[in-house]
Image (cartoon, rainbow over all chains, first blue to last red; front, side):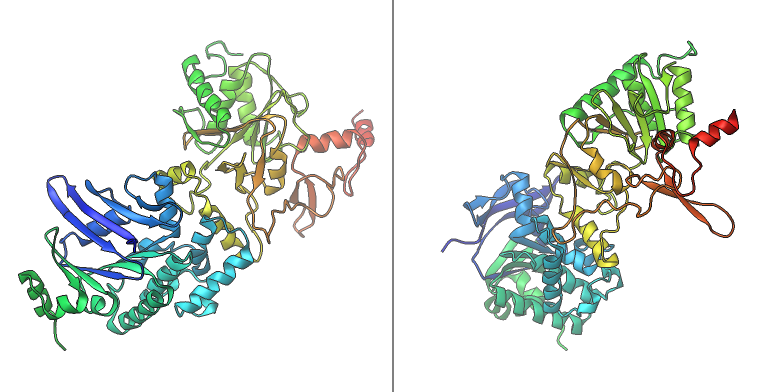
Length: 256
Length: 293
């Protein structure tokens, strides 16, 4: 089986400072990879390099494209990469403000990707948008409201709908539940888990919340100071951490 | 003509710089060419871009017409016409047919333009994507990569909010199947006229951009399959000349709110009245001349 995403030796420096170094992994179709680590451990840098938002200094990110098969997305021409990022890829930002157009209605936000790939029938766009709003539990009568009138949890769900509307195969998530209260978090995670299973999505989820990866991720990668210190199945890593830092991380979780 | 000015105010080097930008604009229809816009003796927003383009195009043999909202006798038009009379000494005319260079703000004349005419538009904001994507770095990339989905988001929002495409001026167009362009704030009524025989040049002084649409270039107004572009326009005729096909201005006539619709293109209206057409509220032209005599 060809991995959907094959990452080899990604390194990124900010001048002399290390962002992340020599990160490699394979992600297979339908698999969810969690990346955990404390602030400044390089997880967001890594995610941005994978998603094409930043250019890594070394390494390859090979994505199994629908038409041409495995292709390095770092050396591919920019138009092609941007096309990928609005069709086969999705990126869910921690702050919905970064991922939504706040002055455009919810329906317009969801429809943007469709229009970007050439859909020119208003009625079709609208019915797909309504369908997706329903999937992420936003009621139909909010379709013409702006995201600025939505609550934080609704904004995050809208961002997910906006990203998934073109049926991407790979979704990057940067702290998708950050800044939400726990009950809203729980519902969002439930929704995400459902969508990932239902649509057979592959995902790379960056978070510092171990509960999130426990629920969502099949495999786990632990990062510290720009390095990957431990990888493995999620339950295995969380239940039997080997590296000292992972042990610290797991034992630091507050028990209620 | 005042000989203390160089011909058409700008120095020759500046005019050459603008002409280079114009040539590039003509070569890449709809593409916004950056140029080193000069300070002009008028405030930004009064047509500094258009004036610079006109200055770069004028020759001593040209006849210049300047219109503002279709009319030759509004402040902006009168000032710019006088400016070129003084600095270039060119002939000026109100008649669309006689002019070789027409500078315009917010209208395209009703009469069809010909191959030996140039129309220069004054443009306040050349970037059609500006209000959806404020970053110029990003919009330039979108133009370069033909990522125009966002333009349709704007039209989508119109329909979602108003039930129809409510954008009525500065209606975005696709030029020759490649660049999305802001046609300057002309009414969408004028959009179909943009496939014309004359050369169309656009100057945005404050934004320092020039763009162009060469003669007979394909200009398509953006729309949806189920909400096609409609040019709109008035349902009644002009009050003075009874034109049914012209873009009308609505005038309020008195304190009780009586209204009158008249052609916004003052030359077109005059031409029709001279030819004997009389609108509902008009006075036959002959009587006027008799009275005057």
